[in-house]
Length: 165
Image 1 (cartoon, rainbow, N blue to C red):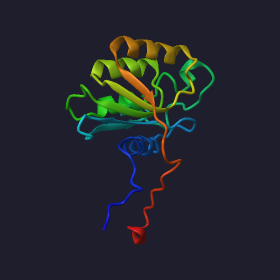
Image 2: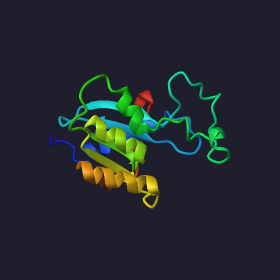
Image 3: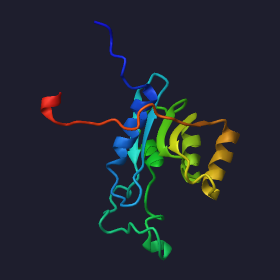
Image 4: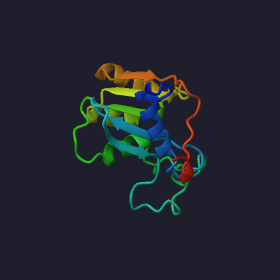
């Protein structure tokens, strides 16, 4: 019997892990996940955007507008930073990070400092912001490769029903 031909690529697999991780986010507006992978296609860490450990996500705001201290922005830890911090201690040097949205400048700094050398993303919808322009400038200077992935599939369905396993 010949092998299957409809299996997903490594990029689809790891981006799928990042998007599945995003479903852990409690942010009502934006859910982002990240997956860090080494050169041997081993997952080193995952993360999603959320409040820091020990900060009750019911006690902190999720608003996007208002007085800065009454919005989510000073508190939420982005998916990329969470993935870097969640790493179990192995070196991230030479790794890739898969993330739905192009990283902000703060995450770009952490990506560079951790030794990650490639960023793969789906959307660059904030390309015109100062934050993303700064990220690209730093990535270029640090020789971090970034590329937008075009997926072969629009969706992959995960079916948890036992009868389909």
